[in-house]
Image (cartoon, rainbow over all chains, first blue to last red; front, side, top):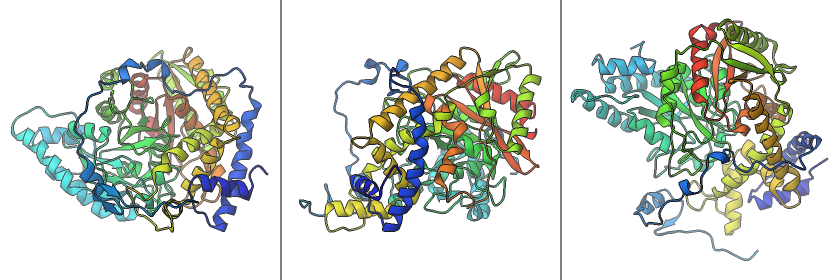
Length: 100
Length: 479
């Protein structure tokens, strides 16, 4: 067994996901099976391999992707607030933040 | 109106003033009203927007102006792509009331080319799935194979074209989500290279893998739509500066002598016998066309699924962190801010999404990052290198799109790993950033569509389309 109920609980906490007991067990079993499968990557010796962090790195030039630091109008606030769950323009209202 | 199905037919008729863009739009909405309930392929229709655009096209015709390449052509857009003022749900409850305040660049470009957007299509939730059964809004029926899934995650986008409820559509592909539904629904479907089409406005699943691409009835139409949406976008720094080639110009050019690589790793056990027969016939067709078909090796193929499901889920866990009930979407009250996050996300996300967030968070967490995510990125490099080496020997690589034919709805929902393993032929090209098309390659027993996939080297869309078109022209679809 690669992943325990406690592991899933811990991860769900990190990911701000509320899971039921049933979900906890179902996902634990499924993810356990998946992690078992994923373990096959250990068959490969990658000690001297660079991680592929960029997909088409040879094409990207830093200069080409930077623009002038100019302020341009961006009047989206009204559109954005229109469909917010609890707007008090220009704020989004949320429950009070309490110490855990 | 029964022959208003391709770009040429629609645009040609409008240009020749045989029909107006408004009439074409009305015809398509009529078809949608008759068939969409049974298929569940469209989630939202935008009649007002469609008719406004149609009127713009009709005004161009009336003024005798030149018509853009997609003038009056009815298209559909997958519901993970932002459309200003039109509900965009990503197939999820957590965005059930989300209305984007802006258009994706790809949407903008479709409309600049004159296309008429009819509506948003159903998909697996946040593009996670291979059957469209993970949508919070119900599954989609495969118009080409009754009772079967249309494939996923772009099941809706494939289905609307197959059912003639759109001339073309946009889907997205992260691990196969354009190519596989194209294969299952019997239509051509393509993803350009990573960076070929701007991701601005595409609601992110996995940022190093996501791509937007077209479905259509013909390879030529796929080429036209891809050309319209491709190109550098300052709003997407991962979009390439490489110029967009004129894909249509090379369609019809001879393919004799083109070096076609067939990787032996893709034709082993595990492929359905019916699929195998059609793919073998397809490969034979390339020989008959005078292509130089040769065996190649892609030795790290067997590690692609493991690599993909580490990287994609890790990136997804990060990208989906923004769904917290604060700024958009429905909110579930909790006693605290954190409680609100947990309850909103717990209630708003479906099972597959939650499963992937948990897996993705786990492989990125302290103590596991090196063993999983970093390892995955290294193997990704090895897979990309396999392809680079192969493309030094061949022009294109041909494979099956899916190891299985379209399967019955509900038949594969209980085993996530089994579902993941069926992505084996498509995730490789996704990881390597390469362009890939799926073209129809016959139907098993005349019933279940099979797709054949063609990969090209990075930004080799032209050769891929050229060969795909040639295959279509010699009757590849009816093998």
